[in-house]
Length: 117
Length: 253
Image 1: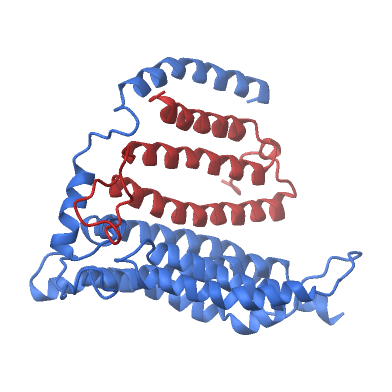
Image 2 (image 1 turned 60 degrees about the vertical axis):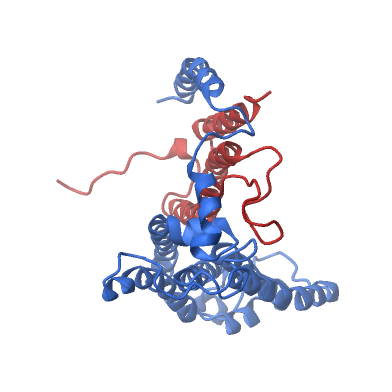
């Protein structure tokens, strides 16, 4: 039972990678990448969780109350915000690919050719 | 590489990794009983040393403030990259008209939508500001508050339509917010060095515990992050919306 959170994280990462590898559409691929990223949230938050502990905010509870790990929470917090902007960057790239090549299928794209040598 | 080979390779890698993952999962500390000493140390030292009650903010802006500076610049780079890709191909010219897809009927916005957006748009904005301002006291902070405040702007778009939204949200202002926020964070790190202190050392008065103005330098960094995040998210939305607008050449015909 105590290994369940780690296995959930591994499974989330696995299905994300499967989606990335078999994707036929860049938008779908970016979604799969977000799933991969979510696995890190599950892993980090599970690593910091403590039974019968409160959130690491000592406003209603006096300082010294048993609280969960605030370091991993801070990591996940910044991860989510930065991850959202990275998703936007990737979507902007997908728009450019569609405008240039007329397709969103990664498997139809050829490697970039240099112009004249 | 054909899709079939790729899938076979993926299955092979997955099969190879299954046993190590299982071993690692069993070797990790049991769920609910972490063994790391860093988190408990922060929880124990944050209130007496920094007079703040939100330990997540204390980690973000003080104990690991240098790391957050890196995150801040990742955010700046990602937003800049996205804006560059979108704006670069479209040019800077702005036409205040929403794009129309030929053949799709244009329906009037329902009154209920307008009403709900007019009520909840300002409320969301105020809630975002509240979250950002109380970073060191209650759950929240510049990151969360900035995102919530930017979503308040989306409610304006939803309720009032594209043209009003464009009039209200100026991309120049968002540019300044995004870059100025990152600059403020970097300056908050550098300015203590002018007094002979270390980088990002908390030299400002710490204030009273559970007070909105507690935390000293954390408050400055928090404002920087709030501006950068709100500006960045609003700008991303603006740029993606601009992709759908009608070009000037199309609207004049």
